[in-house]
Amino acid sequence: MMDSGGAEAESLDDFRTRVREFLRAEIGPPGDSAPLTLRNTGGDDAEDLREVARQRELQRRFFDAGLAGIAVPVEYGGQGLTPAHQRVMNEEIVGYDFAGRLQVPNMTPCMAVILDFGTEEQKREHILPILRGERLWMQFLSEPGAGSDVAGALTTAVRDGEEWVLNGSKVWTTGAWWADWGLCLARTNWDVPKHRGLTVFMFPIDAEGIEVHRIEMLNGNMDFCQEFLSDVRVPDEQRLGDVDDGWTVGLRWMFHERMGANSPYVTLPADFEHTALDGAAVLSVVAEAGAIDDPVAQDRIGEAETLHLVGQALTRRVGDAMQRGTMSDQASALVRMFVGLSLARRNTLTFELAGVDGIAWTADDGPIAFRGDDFLMRQAACIGGGTIEMAANVVSERVLGMPREPSLDRDRPFRDVPRGPR
Ligand SMILES: Cc1cc2nc3c(=O)[nH]c(=O)nc-3n(C[C@H](O)[C@H](O)[C@H](O)COP(=O)(O)OP(=O)(O)OC[C@H]3O[C@@H](n4cnc5c(N)ncnc54)[C@H](O)[C@@H]3O)c2cc1C
Image (cartoon, rainbow, N blue to C red; front, top):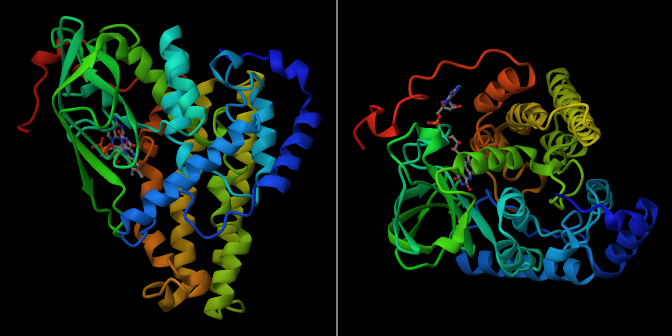
C-alpha cells in the first residue's frame, strides 16, 4: 500500500534536516487560534470559516514544500516515503503551527480508506485535492439508531440505473458544515445479515438532497452536525468498494480511525493527545490557583503526570510494535482505551486543581480559563472515534483472542431483526 521507494532517495536524517529548515523558515508558532474543534469558539461562524481557510492555506504550504502526504504513494501526489518519515515530521513539528482540522477524520480515516479501497480513477481524482487542502472530508458513519453498532445502519441506498438513491440520516458528523465531501456507509441489501448488506459511497456534502443541521454541544460548540439525506443521487463511480461489501471497507475504516495520531497519514505534533494537559500545563493551573503547597493538590499533580507519561510511553511503544509487526494493527485499540480514560481523568484532576475559579472564568483568566469547559466535555475523549467500551471489545476479542460477545442478529436477514420504534 505504501511506496517505500522514496525512502531510499531520502534518509531519515536528511528528511529531518529538510523538515527543520522548512519549519524554521516558513512556519510560525501555533498562536492562539484553535487548531482543533470542541472548544466553544463563541458562535462566530465567520471566524471559524476563516480559521478553516487559513488551515487549508497552511496545508498547501506543506504540500508545495513536498511535505504533505509523506507516506502516500508518489503517483497520487504524496512523497512515497515511510511511516518513519511521518514520525520524524511529527517530532519536528512540536511547537509549530499545523493544520489540525485537516488531519482527523480527513487524512485518516477518510483518505486512508480511499487509498485502501479506491479504484485507480478514484484515487487519482480525490487524493491530490486532499493533500493540497482543497477538499476536506468528513465521515458519515453514526446514525441516530446506530453508533457503536455501526453495521446496524438504516440509511438506505437503492440502485437506479447508473446511480444510487440515498435516504436516511447521519449524526454527530464533526465539521460537516465547513467540509466538502462525505464518506458514507449505507444499507444496500436488507435480505442478508446486517454486516453483509452494506456499501460505502462518496459524495459532496452540498449535493442536492442533503440538509445539514448544526447541533450544540454541552459547552456551546456548534461543530457537530446531523444530516438528512432525501433522494440524494450518487453516481455508481462514487461507490467505494464492492456492492454489499461495505463491512470490509468499514472494518478498515474503523481501524484507521483507532490509529488516530499513530496513523502514517497524520501530521500532528508527537504526543499531541497527551501534551494538552502535560505536567507544565497542570502545574500552571495549580500555581494560578495558589495551591502548590497543598498535599492533596500534590497527589493530584502526581497522578496527572503519571497518566501523561504512561500514555506517551504506551503510544510510542504500540506504534513501534505495530510498525515492526510484533503487535497486530488491532493493538491501536489499547492506545485508544488508555488515551480516552487518561484524558477524561486528567481533565477531572485539573478541574479540581483549579478550585472555585475553574467554575466561572473569562477567556483572559490565564491557565485556569476553560478548565470547567474541558471538564464538562471530558467524556468526548471516551466516545468520539468509537467508545472505549468498543475498544475494550477489540482488545479482548482481537488482541487477546478471547471469545466473541454473543450476537442475536449475526445470522438473520437484517429485515427480520427486531428494531425499536424510530
Ligand atoms: C467528539 C466526537 C466526535 C464524533 N465525530 C463523529 C463523526 O465525525 N462522524 C460520525 O459518524 N460519528 C462521530 N461521532 C459519534 C461517535 O462515533 C458515536 O457517538 C460513538 O460511536 C457511540 O455511538 P452512540 O453515541 O450511538 O452510542 P451507543 O452506541 O448507543 O452506545 C451507548 C453506550 O453503550 C456502550 N456499548 C454499546 N455497544 C456496546 C457493546 N457491544 N459492548 C460494550 N459496550 C457497548 C457504548 O460504549 C456507550 O457507552 C463523534 C462523537 C464524539 C463524541
